[in-house]
Length: 125
Image (cartoon, rainbow, N blue to C red; front, side, top):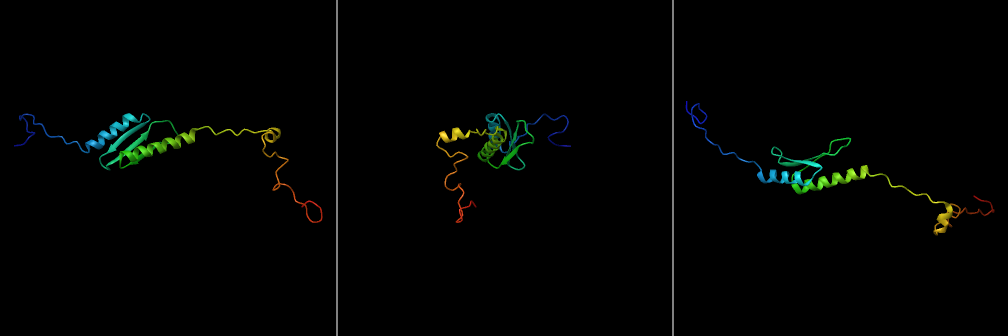
């Protein structure tokens, strides 16, 4: 029997090809830059993936063919997260006296459009 892996033969080094080296390096760089994300590169699909590592009701995964596009999708996902977790803005209620003091119409004075118009007979409609 002949061959490279035959018993008794010396070890022969074989060239190991690194597939999509620049893309994998870019995924590793993004993984270090974005602390709340785990960034991966898929050799099979030739696409970048990012998995959010924050706590939430559902898993957040974004995908794009380019690293720049992936970063945009990650930013969009973070903005959606911020909008969903932000407390609602409080609407301050003002008393009628305060609103009249500020020059705005109070509940009694609604301006000409809010006043009742009288019918030709003199009675309110």
